[in-house]
Length: 292
Image (tube, rainbow, N blue to C red):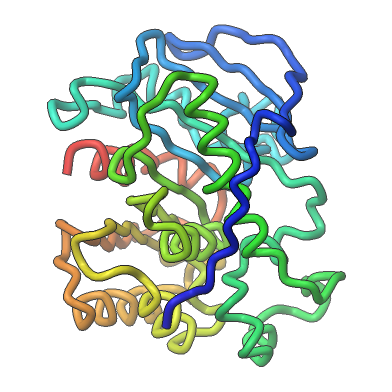
């Protein structure tokens, strides 16, 4: 199964407005701009050049901000991991720390519409049965393809323009958690020429179960073209994840991906489903990308 791509190569800079000032953070600086009505937060290392890696993350509202600024008083711990030296940029990337980018939503009620793998979900409406009716999207319209095309075809080129990057898929990663984990793998499957690495934490495989695993993983490029990380805990919402996590491992191996090389699967016993848990291990997928 291969997903049909929409090619919209309109220059991203035509839709960009600067909306805020910069501030120092974790030895670098945090700045923000707006793209197509979305706030984009960017952490820039003190030293960056054309070969600096680039990491783009879903759910930007709690990705780079201090816990005092987030909606739930939790964050991914990215600045903290950088400041403490837990994120290590080795020889593979010439010692370059990545540029970290958090992408916001225009409408928080449309999170599932944007992050759910559209080409998997639309032909399989029964997958929505895994979601509490109260939590189902208010709009039945899937927007995952438009969202992923925006990231790959307009945001990433705009970031390259702003920061003088020479783009390469192996230096460009997509990251997300829970439903954002599915959106991360879908983004890599849809645009492997842009995102060569997908880093998914607490990947929400219960949405579709084995069929989601088979269709989503089966849509990835041939082994060696991209690298995928996926993990889970075993408490809170994550208590339902381990069986599907192991099914993901089995599927990736059947597809010919090599564990710890072209894909990595981690279990984190005693951890659950919120940013404070992800912050405790966020450096592990990032370091696997940078140094693997």
